[in-house]
Length: 306
Ligand code: ACO
Image 1 (tube, helix red, strand yellow):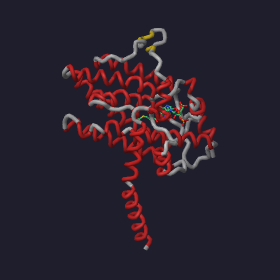
Image 2 (cartoon, protein in one colour):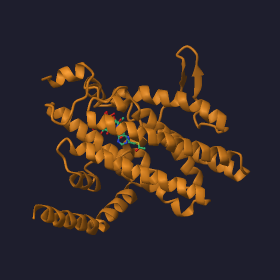
Image 3 (cartoon, rainbow, N blue to C red):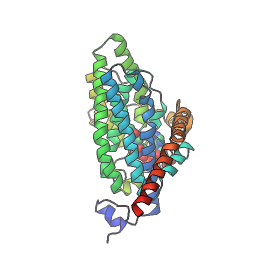
Image 4 (tube, protein in one colour):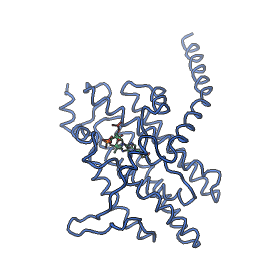
């Protein structure tokens, strides 16, 4: 039998029945739960636009996308449950503010252009962060991530295609796209987390091969990937310091407002209260569904045993 250290050193996957340090288990529960909460809370900003989609086609695409986010949340709660926690308990921890979700979902989606920009920038950032997680050391998380990343790629492309269409449209549509890019650019960079020097978890998570790259490495990768896409789209990224650095072979860019990230993470963003309140209401309104499912399972369990 291999020890935890041998599994990690050999770059194999840690499975639920393997012995693992308590800290590893706690870190995995924290990260997977935060990730699951982000997917579920992340349904809200775009969900608001389903009834106001400009065409049947756009509505079908947006519906499918928001449903995918629900599915991602469910895979991830299942992955967390393999570590010995209960989904109901994780939901309680979310709605009581004891567990976090991504800062990005505390910003409002003000126009339909925001739907495109969320797909392009927010899902683009999510892909950058999550593709390396397909090689994360915890097996159930890494495997969930493979399917999630495939769906995220579709989300990113639908966003980019929507923006391309709007940029070929009227002046007002082009301005709406630019306005949305101006609002979402910096929050998207903040999704990758605090700078490495202020990231308490990165070193240990890298040693355990939970994270494969640091927050700053992934942020840089996202900027380098996005700049040519912005050029192609014909939008301006709102950063006067953004320029190609031939020596480094990367783009230089400005510093995100880290005070804003801290504020948003600790509950002070535009939409934190509203997001949690809606999640709480949805959870409470769904109580009868959970009770009915339990009654059904109990009845069929009795029938099977009889
Ligand atoms: N929003 C909210 N909380 C954040 C964010 C953010 N953008 N960035 C960092 N944090 C939190 C961390 O979760 C950590 O919380 P803790 O107090 O529970 O320890 C704390 O701030 C310090 O940050 P780090 O030490 O850098 O934490 P970590 O090593 O976990 O890295 C990261 C953060 C990069 C987000 C990592 O957890 C990760 O890769 N998670 C999986 C991806 C994910 O959750 N994506 C969700 C959004 S994508 C989507 O749903 C479309």
